[in-house]
Image (cartoon, rainbow, N blue to C red; front, side, top):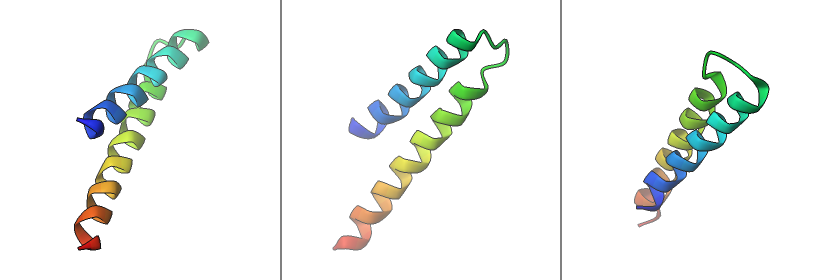
Length: 51
């Protein structure tokens, strides 16, 4: 659940930045959403290799 929340929060923050800047294309939503996804993949990788 924490992994999905991280991606959702990053995407939401990107959406808000896009709105604040008045951008028509959601570039920050995509970039921050992908950054959140990459972060969750890294956390899963770390937890798997810790054992």
